[in-house]
Length: 307
Image 1 (cartoon, helix red, strand yellow):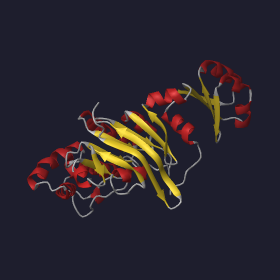
Image 2 (cartoon, rainbow, N blue to C red; image 1 turned 30 degrees about the horizontal axis):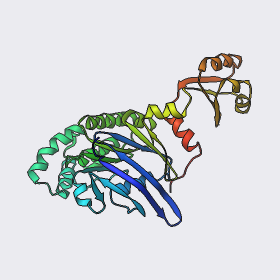
Image 3 (cartoon, rainbow, N blue to C red; image 1 turned 135 degrees about the vertical axis):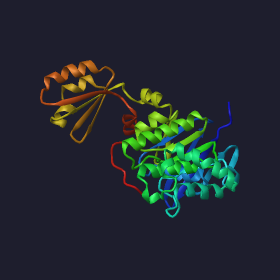
Image 4 (spheres, rainbow, N blue to C red; image 1 turned 90 degrees about the vertical axis):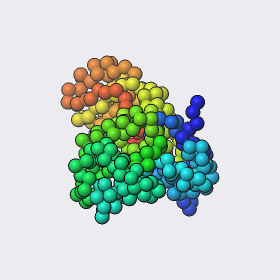
């Protein structure tokens, strides 16, 4: 088996009395997309920063390309591409100039950078914006420019921290298309995201973290099959208390109530759908279990505040 491009072993990090990352271990194989999902405050961003050498772990180790982070940070970052959660583009430079300046950070020759700029702008669908400054771009364009900038050194590993947050559906789909292209080129991606459809679409494997610990790991469909009933029937428009505690319970393996909706998780949907005919005043939606159901089962439905 190939050497993992990224290996995190028993990472632990505290801030004061707050244990943010708790004995976390995982690996990323060459050509793989590993998604890290979890609620706010689960430790995702701290883990991301430790992988970049920006935050030192209290214990544990980070190895990238077989090298140690942060001891070998310069050698690692030559082969690394990063898109952070927040926009770090230089507002005073055009799109092409942002790529040029970033390439110089890697010590690349001007001629080599110039030869890559047209290809990267085309990849980001920004050829027509080469001379525009970031302030003239839409949110989706800025994120694509950030992705193009992260590719200036032709990295083999990309670390992407919530790369599509704040984008409209069209912009998100275009970003997904570009990330799929990078995976087809053999690049590896570590991706944090709050979008479950994004995780299922892009990721070969998922790491689910909560309170700094790994609570599940595996292929998206395998995790769904392992932790969930195959069918979900959402029922709303009636008395949730009566619906969740009445005779419909006999047709479900598990029931959850959220607001005015009752979620019935079942191995076989037809008996419950038939029983619902006796409740003409309620509405229902029958669908297969998905990653959002998995996320909510493993981490809970309560709102987590930032920080």
